[in-house]
Length: 434
View (cartoon, one colour):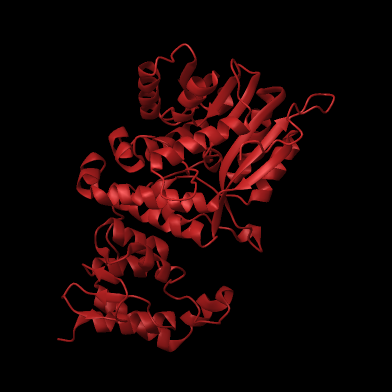
């Protein structure tokens, strides 16, 4: 019988119209492909059925989450090689917008797909592996649906997040200096950067939107004397944060609530921090988001919006949410270009005073999180589930590459609600945080 791996390599190259960038090791132990490259391990022919059913990233991800596909070697290099590799894409140099219909009409392409189908075994494919969000209906970003989406991502066990994030328990990008810095120190530097940009001082009221495990609230209260209200939709996060606040002796300064930010009515606040939360709002909700935060601030109140941004599309109407991220990681999450966020803040009445890109900082942070997970994969699988541990490793490694390759970015936007006389209350040279 002919070895499987050479057949897979040949079929992949026929379907792609270009060389397949990785070595392949098949379920029969055979190997094929360019030497020196990471090995894509195809443990079971079920993975091929997934790829035939859902070509591209979602099919690959389902195979990886199920353990039917794996990578032997450098995962980052493998993902970098696979970027843009989908069955049925145009050959190098062809117009991708026309590639699907043209290639399906090509008899050689159809013949190769038929051979792959025979090798994969009978369709339909197996059901999606665990942890996939399915069966969503109705309008997105209702309060109930947002609460379910947040629970899917965050209520998977605080012990699991402790393993991945480390002692800081901060789930947004750290702020790195020169040289080798412990992750915890870089996260403390980010928390302090946020506090200084907001100009926090003794007695200021701070609203921490999407307060997570309470790290910013504790830092702002302990180091700057702020009075902090933290809101989150995750009950596990809130319980963890309240315990930390009590242990720090700050219960008189910090109030942690399980509450939708749209239901906060006890303004005015002196400052609002929204760190890694706006990605959950959805592009259609940005104007409401900006208007509500504006309404919660008093004159001279400051907003620090820390948010991941995607690059603008030539045709914004053609933008599609990443299926793997939407189904396995952040249900209903959406990224918007930086200009869209700035425009929404200005439309709400904010004066945008400063924008800082910290894209490279997120890549460094994600690589540290992946290293934490890889250092104790078995425990991570016990704390969450084997599928969840593989999902997090794949999504964090792929995200690190996306930041490094400038496919996505992350920005801190400092905005102010000026008084009726136009006074911002900010110093003439406000970049005192550098």
